[in-house]
Image 1 (tube, rainbow, N blue to C red):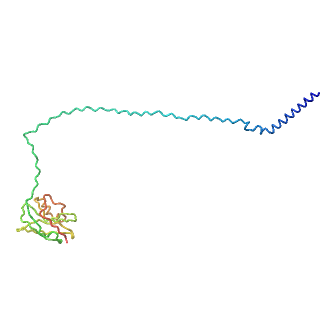
Image 2: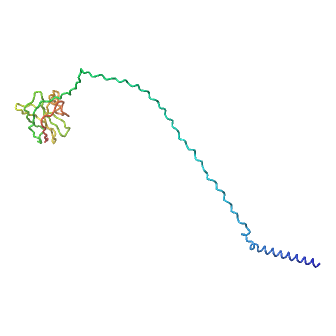
Image 3: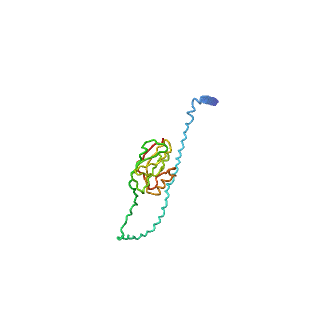
Length: 226
């Protein structure tokens, strides 16, 4: 009996010690076994393998479009024209060089205006005087007045008829005060031109130019109308 009692006492003692041990361990669990020691280290998740870059295949090299060569139409063959040999010149007919038309030359005539003098002041009407020792019968000599300002028209004043001494006088008109006038003689052998210079309408309205076959004779005297 004594041995059984001792065994039971030992079992009770062991169980009590085990209870104390469990209580002590439970109370100091965090100290004895910290969480970092118990928690297994986190295993790093391996990064995913990067996806290969999206490579767009290069387009096929374009082959340039060939432009068809236009068809060349062959030129028709040209039949050469047979060469015609020139005929030999006719030795019997010599070449004649045409002569230019002859310009009529008026016979020499001397004439001059003695009044008014160059640069003189004149009135509206004035007897212009001069000398012309000789005048061929086929020539017509006229006194003319030309304005240097208004229109520059030529106004025939009258036919010059010298006396036996060669003196002549023609009544002349200087219309506009302050204007300068050229006073001069002209001559012609053309009857139609002489008729134009003798026409009263030409003396009144003037001529833009001298009639055909008419040319100046002697010096020009410039005067000023008062």
